[in-house]
Image 1: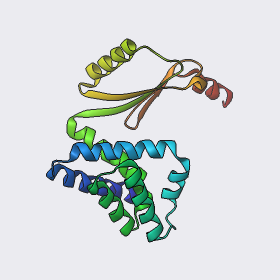
Image 2: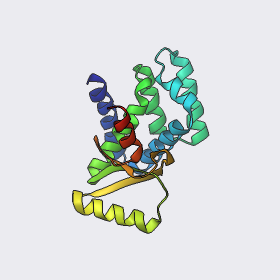
Image 3: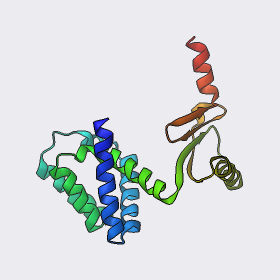
Image 4: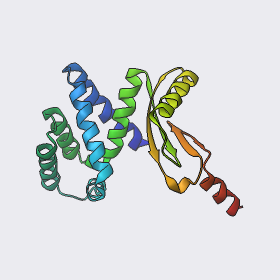
Length: 176
């Protein structure tokens, strides 16, 4: 539990700084870029999660990322503060906490929907509208296709998950 509260404090701190300096949009773009980089690079993810790297090595990586992806000065300094405080390995959790906080401040809910097949944009819009109506809040949903589900879907809203996939049902039957 300590990890969660600590990462949440860092997310709140950088959110507050960006809000005060009217650069929240820029910081959001930086966090989006970093989230995408972490999603695409398994090696960087492993590097970040390893707390044994030396301070100078991590700072060099931060400088390289800042230069390559044009991170803002605030975001670069924030990453360096994490490094200085020996908390750089929490970056992925802080990214998630930042987006949770951002969406909460906007009155939105983050959700993911994995489907067994692709759906049209109008079907996606219908799903978003129905979830908005049910939850009485604006929902920010990301759609993905996972053909291993066979049929059905997995909807995750916060910590709640609704799994109607044939894959899970078959696994449950086989494991009984």
